[in-house]
Length: 65
Image (cartoon, rainbow, N blue to C red; front, side, top):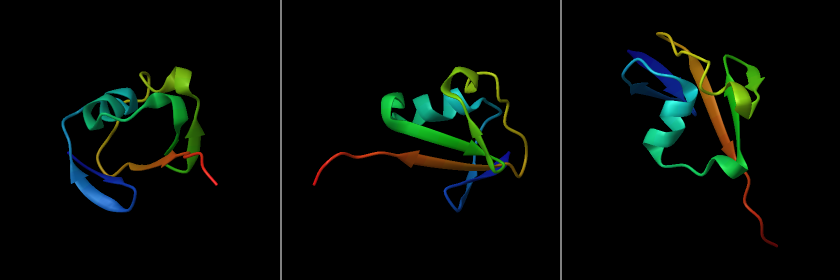
């Protein structure tokens, strides 16, 4: 199935937002996820099942000066 992640089309297996984050090895502590223009609370990441042509934006916060 194809979805759009941060502006790039990617082929993925059927999965949830949480599985995508784990598969990419990203630290969940400093992420915000948007799914089809809706910010998804971290508690719901495992409940959102991705579908063909979904759009996901992954934003991470980095500290520093």
